[in-house]
Image 1 (tube, rainbow, N blue to C red):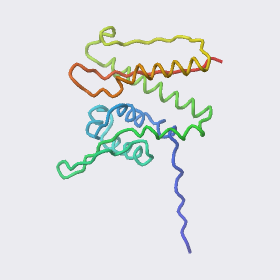
Image 2: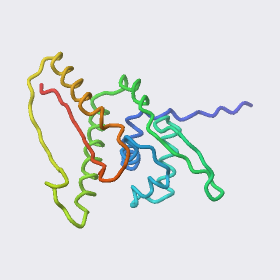
Image 3: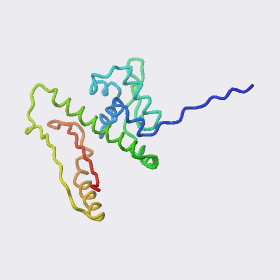
Image 4: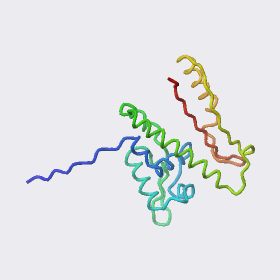
Length: 180
C-alpha cells in the first residue's frame, strides 16, 4: 500500500505578508541587509523564537535571500536581504479581497512605525521631518508614467545610502489610488 502525502500549497506573497511580524521583518530589511541578531535589535518586542520562525518562513517562500553566512561562537549567523523579484509574478492572483488585505497590512505596518516614533522620549516632529500629505493630481497615463519616472530618478541617488554619521533611517511610504 502506497502512502500519499499531500503538500500544503505554497502561500502567496500576499498571504505571507498578511502577518504583522513578517511585514515588520520585510520593512526592516528594506534597503539594508540584516542578520537575525540585528533584526532582533530592531524588533525587540518580537520573541526570538517567533522571529526565527518567521524569517525561516520568508526564506523558504523566497521572499528573503541568504546573502552571507559566517560562524559565530559555534553557530551560523546568516545575513538576509529582500528578494526584490519575489513579487513580480504574483500579481495575477490579486483580487479585491487580497488587494484590500495587502492595503490593510500596509496601513497597519505604517501605523506601527508611527507608534514606535511616538514611543520616543522626546518628540520634535518638525526637526524629525515628520509629515503627512495628501493631494489629488489630474494626470493622463503618460503624465503619470512621467511622474513615476521622475520620482524614481529623484530617489535613486539616496536609495543605496548606508548607515553613517549624521544619517537617520527615514521611512518614505507612498500610496497611489486612482479616483474612480
